[in-house]
Image (cartoon, rainbow, N blue to C red):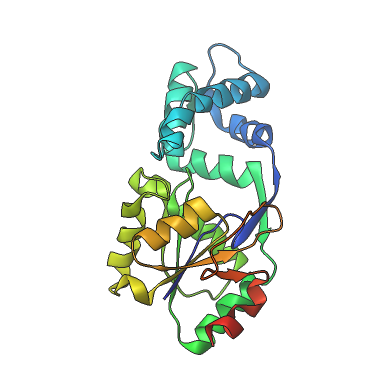
Length: 228
């Protein structure tokens, strides 16, 4: 099996504008006793998210819905949709994503070769939303599972999030290659639990010296050649 990271490995964020998401959400407001503007709500939301930075630095993930619930209760805002719908609106309207070049070919090649695939990614949004977006970007993918760190409250490189993937796969860890774009997060984390790490050298990242035995990819489209 090959398990992929998502951000900068399978998908790129072309544009992120949190205010755009809040403006769309405010169309669903049923109670706004303070007459708050979208700009005020967006600013307060971002300030509240910053309070959880210490959690992320200690590799604990705080789910997007948890923070949004806190924000809207503090601001006394009510909406005509569920918290899950609010989360979807915020992520879909705030961010524009596209496939990383070569990712679609890599997935097609794995399918052709009979190699299973899955995703484990650090993300505060729900895993089911990540799966939705991956399904749109990569129609016909055969991901057996999609895990976001928000699903477990733990961030890579914590070992248990990788071990959860191992358990779901039913394989010994040495039979799993993990592909990601960050050395400390993806390479070191997957290697520590016995997986075979593969570094995708994203052009937006800076890399220093790398271990000589590390499998590296400059182009995902050539992944099949390395496997063969």
